[in-house]
Image 1 (cartoon, rainbow, N blue to C red):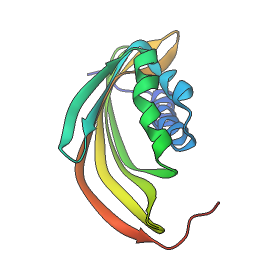
Image 2: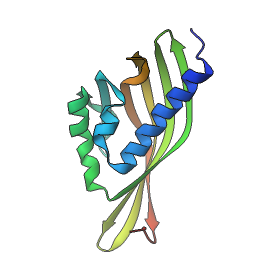
Image 3: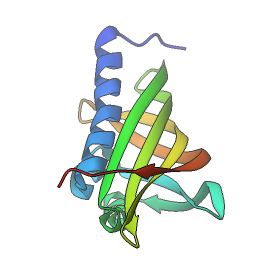
Image 4: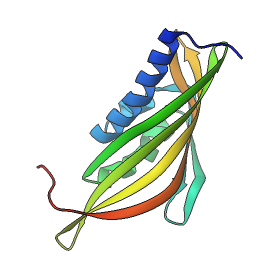
Length: 151
């Protein structure tokens, strides 16, 4: 196993943080550009399947897959931890996250919180780290009442 440099760790942490930020901003094109051109995103199909169930390969397919976020008015992805390992110009990551999804039904706001982790594979592409494969696994789901959301 190759030891990651401090710079590599910073770059990988930034890559993961940008994925969360761009998700919360609903910028599917920016998210897709975090992936290698032939990158793969594997998503669950909650609530029926909390494990990886649907595979999207290539930036265009990833953009289409992420369009479902447009149906959720507010999200907040809180990164709880990350562990990276490297092997040359490839690396792996285990990312822990809580993803909050605020929705409104019958005038009541609810936070659908997914406690999840990503199993990632990264590659250097054109001198920068990119996601080669990201697989999302929901560990558990909870709902919480929400009093108010900033407009």
